[in-house]
Structures are given as structure tokens and as C-alpha cells.
Length: 173
Image 1: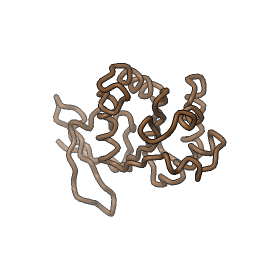
Image 2: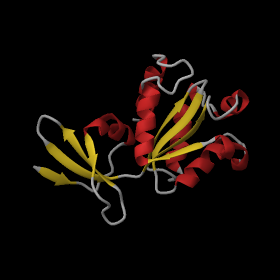
Image 3: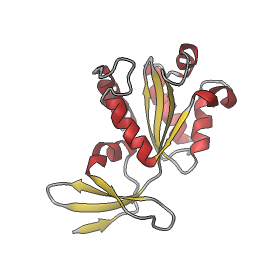
Image 4: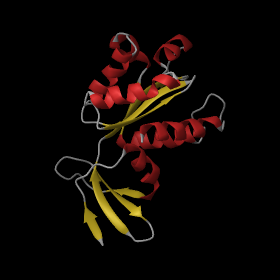
């Protein structure tokens, strides 16, 4: 039984079940993912989503920039509400540690989301731009798995980042 849905799934839910997905060709210019949302019942849903990730980390930015762009834990909810509230993105999750600040989001306007990061931290977008990486759809998913597994950490394989990713997921829900 297949069901076609126009409802956009949560970015976090999408990232959690992406291992059960495969890609379809473009439909009306939108990259579409087919996701087995319930393995036991075999229900298949088709969603359109523009997943995008951007951020800085210990590979791309010096410590002073990373410190300036970090989100303190107490401001995380405010930042998420601000980003989604300005309707720049439909959904978002923010990972912010001492070595990285990354935003995973569902957006049709990635540049506006990137500019939001600079504005939120009161810095010029041009000052942040040289240190940013921007990852569309599949690259964003691959990067999220590399980060969660510790493959993109300063100390290869360190286990703390998985907990930090889980916290980002909980904050975004």
C-alpha cells in the first residue's frame, strides 16, 4: 500500500530514517525521496523536501570564529524559533559544540538561512562566508552521518558528538 503525501516530514525524522530511503527522478523540478516510514507495515510515502546543511567546524574556521558563531545551550530554543519564525526555513536542527556550529534545515532559500546565521550572531555575512560549508540534500545527509559517527571530529571516532546530535534532534522536535 503506497500513500502520497504533500505534508513535509520533520527534518529530524527525515534524517533518522534516511537509511531506509532511495531516490526517484525529479518530479516537477523537485528532488523527491521515497521513504519506508514503517518497516513492519510496508507503508511507503513520497515527500518533497529540500534538505540543506551549512556551518563551520574545526576544519574550516579558526577558534575565534567558532566561538563567535556558537549557540549557548540556553539560547538554542530562541535561535530555532527565530530561524523558523521568520519563515526562512520550514524546519531546522542546530548542532553547536566547541568545534562546530551546523544548521540542518528544510528550505527553499538556503542563502537566506545562511544570512540568518550571520545576523543572529551580529557579524557580517561576508566575514563568515570564507569559513562556511554548504551542503545540499544528499551531501547534507552524508555529512550528518559522518558527524554523528565521529568521523568528522577533531579526535577521530570520539563518542560525545552522537549525544550532541541527539540533543539537537530533541531541541528541534
